Image (cartoon, rainbow, N blue to C red; front, side, top):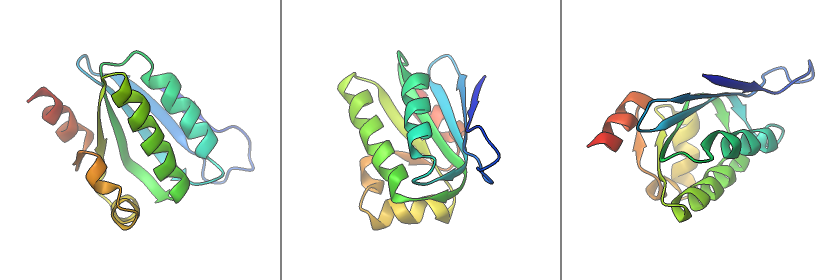
Length: 125
């Protein structure tokens, strides 16, 4: 498992990015707040973690806040990975993430499962 975290005490709620290879897919988990202050870190960590992956599950179940900057990152990542032939699924089960996806009309652009385990199962079937 690889973990990346924003440095410094100025980040009261840092964003942590964990990646774990599950053989058939890479699960990248975001934990904390994904907003304008953490967006660049998240984008870089996601691109680095997903390079060369055959399938990716972005686990958002650990997010406590999800702003429009996060939507942009997910859409760009989806485009880059799909252009490379990589399947991308989201894991999200909380209103803080699902509501912005729905309000911005983005929810239909991703397969969304309630957990990373469910998303991995969907990739295998």
